[in-house]
Length: 567
Image 1 (cartoon, rainbow, N blue to C red):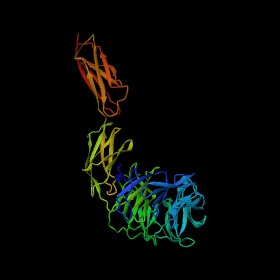
Image 2 (tube, rainbow, N blue to C red):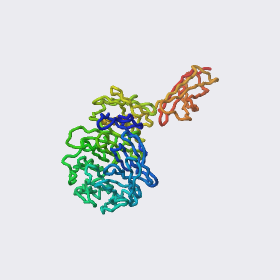
Image 3 (tube, rainbow, N blue to C red):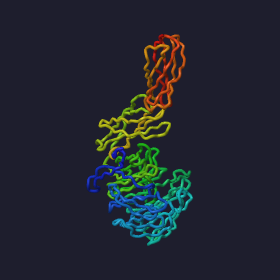
Image 4 (cartoon, helix red, strand yellow):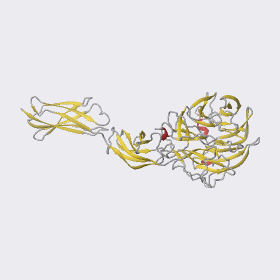
């Protein structure tokens, strides 16, 4: 699908310069060489984005390094799998968690500058954060599927010199951390993966001293146990006064940092069925990005004013395709400090991941499908091309890149992605498909939006796919004798898929008295031709009928030839 429509392409195109220079709205996407997302860190000072791969359980690993245009420019090699990462307060050091150490890399030279030993992390990975000028990390000492068990112990440690210290704070499930320049002495910790019964908590710590001092805490379930937190991500506003939480069970919660109470106004709900997965505030304090797991043209990413009271329209983006993923991964959003670029990691729900570099536009416009969808032919047949015609209307300026409409077909075999269709200047388009099974098929057409247009609501059309037609052509003499016999040749043809081999055609003979008898069947050759011979016993007008009963994908057909028998 087109770059501007699908929010990503396999190629890389340089985006316009940020900050003081005018930025052209765009979204570039790079395929990440990872099987499971670990963490992402944005380094403004050196214009680098670091992405770790959490998919490895043993052996050497790498932290992949990208520039702000989405181009891979290097990697930081580690001798063990890397997971969590965090920049030091001055941005000079990238702290990378590996199985038994927190490794420090100099961000200017991209070289290793030190390490602090830690308890051994088998497979679960760590969250890492810097608060109060110190590095903190979580520990879940289990393997595989045990990492997310609700009854597992999870611990919070700090780094001191070349070793670690136990803070004494622990929980069950997993722990997620968040800290940053917004409130440099505040560490936010939340409980994740503990299930509804645990009524997961969120709390903050003052990290300015030698030991952590816990501040407010909150659990979210009501008296009936409903509304428990399903934590995916945490973010702090640029002024440090608000904390946003991506809650897969609720949406995006906006809290007062002072007491973790709900903010006076919150963000609008996500699309129906969408689950919050990530959240991040821009460094300039203007915007919040909200990631989600959504289907179809429902938004997977929303960019809107950080202040819910600001009435500016929300920018919406949908990811759905083989070139851009289908969802924003947990903790997969990060901004540049000036708010000029947003970095988003998406996944297809399997092992493929993409890094999107999004330059948000000043405004985004609506789109919609208009009129009704029509099909050509009106009665589709299996194995034959089917065209679905419609019209897409776009508000605002004309797109700078070709616009395409995506489509999927749902039938008894499941859901199949159909080739996208280019939209003409007048908004018209034709989606082409070749249905491969009989029965009802429903086509869902989607415009996933582009940087300057919001996604359109899905439209559907349902068709009944029939068997393909067949035809029999006969060549027979006008007259023949009883002694010489009758020879008839013919050909069987069919639309759609190729006819099966070994077809035997039914042959009948009806004489002038009306008596009908079945003759030896005619065998069809690979090219569809056949030949039949007969020695009729009576003179007069004789009718030969050749019939094909059809098969699983083709209808039947019959042809007749009349021969006058003499002598």
